Amino acid sequence: MRVMLNGELRELSAPITVADLVTHLGLSPRRIAVEVNRDVIPREQYPTRALHEGDTIEIVHFIGGG
Image (cartoon, rainbow, N blue to C red; front, side, top):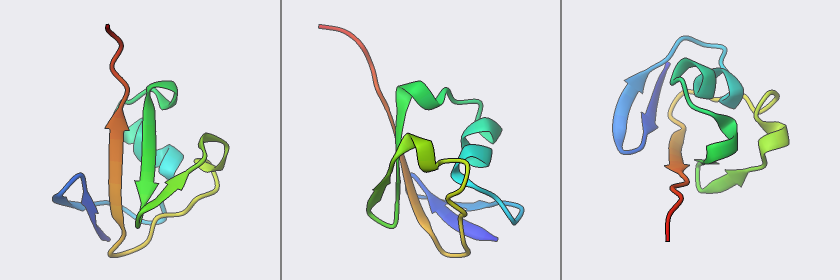
């Protein structure tokens, strides 16, 4: 299935959840925010929020500093 991930077209195997995608990308769920089709997904919903063909996903990394 094809999705748009941070502005780039990506091919993902289906079925896949937000948690699966985060793991696949090697990201820590504690340091990111995920938006699917302009909806921010609460972290506790990552394991159950399925991704679908054509979804637009934005992943934002938190960066510490002052």
